[in-house]
Length: 172
Image (cartoon, rainbow, N blue to C red; front, top):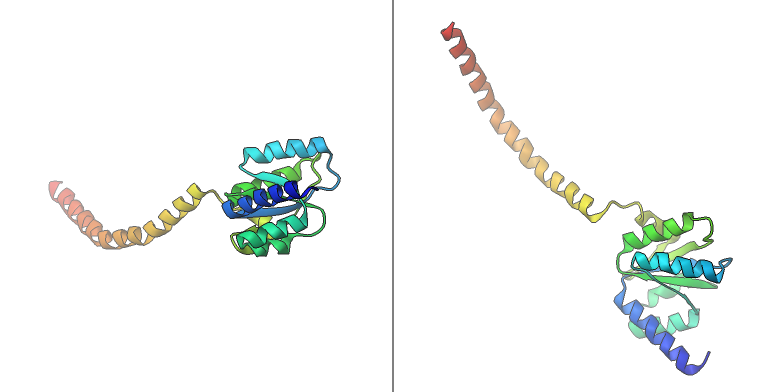
């Protein structure tokens, strides 16, 4: 690779590492060029930039951006996926792994500064969506208030029921 092209690649990788919170390392061996191209399009729909990269160029870019933890997921021939939304990216990679024409395997990931194993990356795909998590949190926050309301209103309900029964008995 020419020096100019290497410096362009390093600059592009440094920009991706600086701007994206989630990085996934995958194998791509056994994939045809057409399969990789189709996979890039599918991953791009999920907001993932997927590049086959050289480990040395990634190491240089990681040193420039201060995200040297990414070097822990570099091993052999690999491709990196860069994404902003970790859960959506994990779901997209799981979907790609399920398709028969795609022989990719997730090796690991980097979420912020934390290194993830392949199992941890794929476990992100099982997380509920943000809306579901917010609804669950709201329900948890609302539960004590609801219990307090019931505890305070039950004696009044009982008094109302006794008075209503007395009114009905007097009416007869």
